[in-house]
Length: 134
Image (cartoon, rainbow, N blue to C red; front, side, top):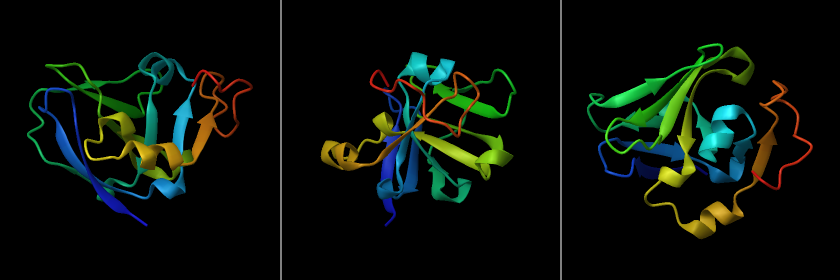
């Protein structure tokens, strides 16, 4: 069942609301950006995401295929969400940084299923051989 959460960067400059069903499963990836950010995320459809701040000061980082926009705060540097379009992922998506959900109870997160993705080897549909570090 979907629940509405409020998310933000560290300084509060970026703020959003999102509707998420954590029971559907969260994700951790070993690709270069997820690895460096220690990202624990949840992908949703764009209609389940509402930016509640002005986009001024929201940075945008892209790399590789340029299919994903990794959004971050120009003030505090925290990356609370991203978005893009990848046909293999079902088209348009928003990726929520679960660590940036202000009203997410830690027990909810601890109980949420986790799926691991082998982005390091561009084998997203497979689980990496090692996941303990993710």
